[in-house]
Amino acid sequence: MGKTLKDLALALLNATLILVALCLVLALMVFNRANSLADSFAENLQIVTPLQESVQTTGAEIAALRTDLAELKDQSGDVSSAAMTRVQDRIEMMQARLDDMMNTVTELRGTPERLLDQAIETAGDQAVMTVSRIRGCVPPETASAPSPSS
Image 1 (cartoon, rainbow, N blue to C red):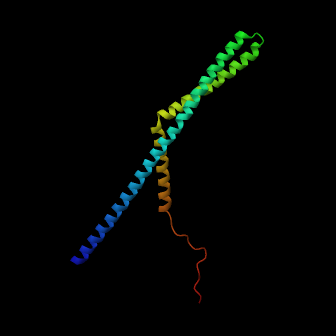
Image 2 (image 1 turned 120 degrees about the horizontal axis):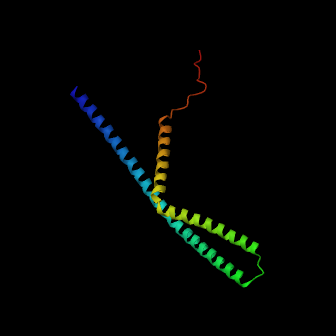
Image 3 (image 1 turned 30 degrees about the vertical axis):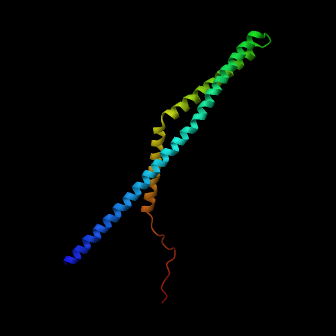
């Protein structure tokens, strides 16, 4: 009786240690995945920098175009005021869109934590769905069970 209890306690300890090791391995995998997500986001934010510079350059070009149009208007009396107004309206619309893009890029660079949190939440939701699918996994039942021949 004592040997049986000892064997049972050892089996329980063995199973517990196996489960702890499995949990540690899974925790390590999750930690590595989170680190790779953070690295990926850091690389993606580095990609945003040239985009921000391009938006700034385009803004400078629009400002130069405005200056050129003002000089053209002063120098030439041939340009109709209606055409000049249309061009100026289009420049203002372009400037407004450019400002919106610049604000979006600045907000994106300023809040990488929000992006990272969203990615981690999405990955967590997918992990939960995968585990729930695995948990409910059962072997398919055969459509036609072979009947014993009599």
